Length: 402
Image (tube, rainbow, N blue to C red):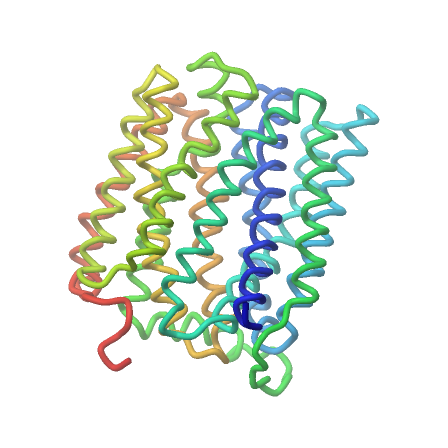
């Protein structure tokens, strides 16, 4: 195993540990919050308070990732995430936990994750060649999705021993990931001058994406599709009130999309997409919307899991295409800022999407909210085909000039 292969393996190990930690903690936080409040809106607030830091800090995080040691940023952020989970474990053990305490600590967790998530994405291109980057992205996604499968199930079963057990276990995994990243060997990169953050440098990522219709279309398509179609925040309600399963059932439901995503990423790692990537992306997002509709109408845990598996499969196709386009078409000196904008879009679709789902569920009911989300996703696909014909016509992940 050469030095670059070894570094890539260490990177994947850190990715697995951090993702396991986050998924385990997410199950515990979601179940504990709904158990304490019985409120769909409270579940939505969990997503909102995670999203606010990523929105407020996005531009500075990208600026920092382009000018400072990216490994150090990731390692410090993961250590802070471990400390936040330790606080949740202590408050839970002392029976001092309530809605506001959870929201405050989750907000702090979101601050650390804003730095970790964006900067983590910039590490991979320094470990592999440009030609092997799409396959490496798919392998990275495979490891992540395997952890997403195991993490919720493990978190659900550990929750039977108490929420504190989940938080402590997840915190330990974050510390392991931080230790690996801190010692990760990478290609040396040219460091840009550490000038103060100006408005021009902070907004450079936004300006670059706006100048690239294919990137803008791919990122915004994912934003609005997942914002409308994501039902992850509602899974505790589906698990307890509709499908009548306990924490273990919630863990299985949380893991089901990852099963589909894992199989898709393994396939793409072996057979990277070569042609018609634009059409494939639109088809995948449409499949995501249809799977959401089926899940919303299901009253069987088997059918619900199957729908979530299809949802995960189609989402992974879209994710790999989007991530490959971003990494391949972003100059290294701007990769942090471009990824920061992408992370903001992802956070908007995921965390703010959870708030949107919780809010609409409180207004209309959980099933109508999920159903409307799936229909909305299909509407976005139709509209984006009209707005971004360049993305629809995109043939390959590499641009013609590469």
